[in-house]
Length: 140
Picture 1 (cartoon, rainbow, N blue to C red):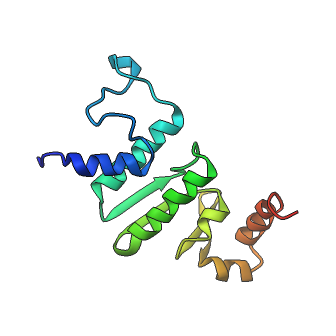
Picture 2: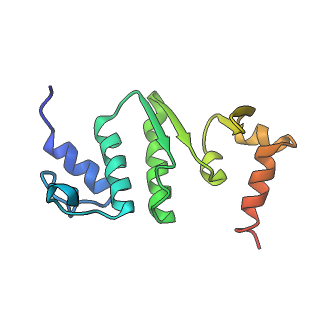
Picture 3: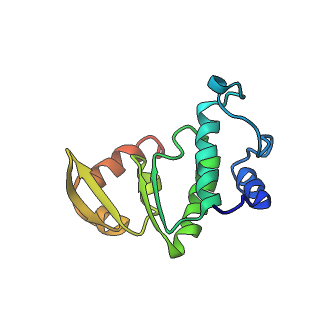
């Protein structure tokens, strides 16, 4: 087992704005540690992924409890990280999906569309419908 790199831990915690939590802090009320909010637990999970720097990363709505500015910052980091990795990003937020190289649209457990944002927008399909529906909330 590799020893922990304290500097790298601090950098990962700083990246997600959890630098007020000590790297040796006991977390979880159930075991006598401090309790974190849902957003803080999510940030901690993101910090772990930054620290570990794996070749494959699966993210399932990783920023759902974060504010839009932090969400954008973290997603931009994942885009940068993804240059030499495979990142599977599960999301219902079309604005985030639109930044991906490849989008797979799943409905009722079946793949119904596959392509880039630009390709999927050109087609009359579920992705375009969802994109237009979500865009209504932003374009007034």
